Amino acid sequence: MNLTKINRRNRLDLKKHPQYKQEIQELSEVKDPEEWYFELNKEQSKFYDEIIEYFSSVDENENSKNSKKQKRFTGAIYQPLRYKKSEKSKEKEDIKEIFEMEQQKNLYDFMRRLLVKRFESSFGAFKQSIHRFKTFHDNFLDFIEKTNKILYNRKLLNKIYSEEENFDKQIEEFKRKLEEQNNQDDELNYYDLKDFDQEKLKEDIDNDIKLFDYILDELKNLKLIENDPKLDTLINNIKTIQKKEKNRKIIIFSEYLDTVKYLEESLQKEFNGRVLVVKESLTQSKIEQINKNFNASYNKNQQEDQYDILLGTDRISEGLNLNRAGMIINYDIPWNPVRIIQRLGRINRIGKKVFDKLYVVNFFPSEKGADLIKSREIAAQKLFLIHNVLGEDSKILEPTEEPTPSKLFERIQKNPEEYEAESLYTQILNEFEEIKNQYPDVLNKIKDMPPRIKIAKSYNNNELLVFTRKNRLYIHKIDYQDSKQEIEEVLFEDILDHIRCKMDEKELVLSDNFWENYEKIKNYKQKESQKIPSKSAKQLAINNIKTLRQKQEYKIYKDFLDTLLEDILEYGTLPEYTLVRIKEMDANDIENTLKELNKLKEELGENYLDSIKEKTKNIEKEIIIAIENQTVN
Image 1 (cartoon, rainbow, N blue to C red):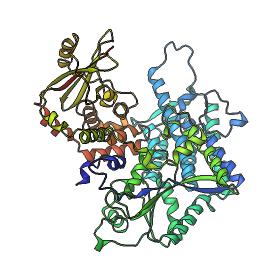
Image 2: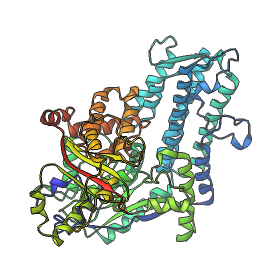
Image 3: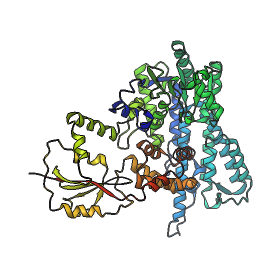
Image 4: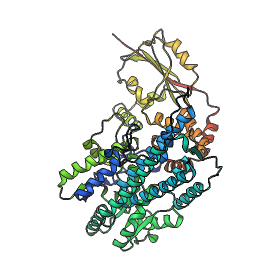
């Protein structure tokens, strides 16, 4: 059996699939994530909490002179309109300006969250980011002093903190624009300083610069770079593993390129150059190196054993077979379950088992001398502080869940395979298999049925369900008890209980309401605005596509986004996994979202929907079955 035919389903589906479950007995067992604690001394632990507090959101009414809040990051240069003097004579609010203020606030939120995530990732990446921020702020303040103008360029500010390798070029570009006072670039906004609260603006920028200086001094005083406890823990624990299992290769993932660069020198030194690092684009030669050293399915005559450790960002979790590795180390907190599933999928390959057990490792901060219970407690509390700062950037919990320190820690340590729920397809298939086993002649009965079926049965509601097929399956419902009796499109999973029945279920006579409503649905013209559950992957993907289409940064992908939207609404060819990928795209994380859109476009093809539309353009809407439910006294 060719398993690639169902590679869009997850491993839980395969394990329960009646046809394939026997063929995947050789899947490795994924152990629950291990906890690796790096120990901070009391001063370092206090500083850790302070950093998170410094980059919490600043309330607009906070007084920067308040000593308790003095070190809070104000992000003044990202939201200059916050300091604009109010015009009492202005009768109507400027809608454009309100929109700009909201954009600026979003950029400030993005920057402060970025710094917290960089800090949690590695002290080295954080130090590098703080240096960049300080340089930027110094230049910005100098420009204000020289010109009495405020320069604002949202697109450039986003580029400056991206993980592109040309960061230095972006800094130089910014400096050039600051120096060219008469620059007419359409993307630049110049505000006249006289319209702003100059004293407050300069004070807040200066306080941010002082905060950066303080942080750099503390990183040095606390020796968090020279004697990095997190990096030491990583090195020592890997050495222990290698003594026990020499053949178990290891993959270290970080969300940030700066962290990869920071780790590279120490790891190469400690492990005698046996670390393969992916820090630029994946060239063909780099892919070949990866395959030779980490792909168990690669030509055995060409396999090598030059590297034991693979270090990189999520670029190495995209489409590569890395099953000669038996452990994944998440150097950053794994907030995004989808990303963790993708990472695990690189080493847990269907039909290509190498290790009986696979291991996942997560890092957490603790304090020196703490036992395991106390370490968990400390780590959970620090996670909770970070989660409160990151807000929507931390997707580990469901929107309806109330976050608590223990719940956050428990969810992060959840086995990645448990995030993958059994699909509706597999549930129904297994149920159908049970029916076939109990009633072997059921398939022959189905074959003998007419092409259109109209039937009534008992249920706890009076309603009509009509299943039609054109390109995909549509299900329309009319609730007889609803006074308006409007046509509603429903999802299969929502009406599964409505159509279930036992083999001895008695057929009822169609009601007087049936034919009128049947014709109503039959002649119904499908509208684009389908009723889809608000929290379903499908609806969230639709919402996200609409958001991306409105943003200038994604204009280059507008046609492709339109195609995706048309597919979801009209054709339904995208699997659940792809819908999840689309809904997980973060419009504010421009760099990664552009990469993900480009990857999806390459996988599907820019005009992939054209061939499907061509095949289905002459297909007439076909009614498969109409089921009327009736309450029976």
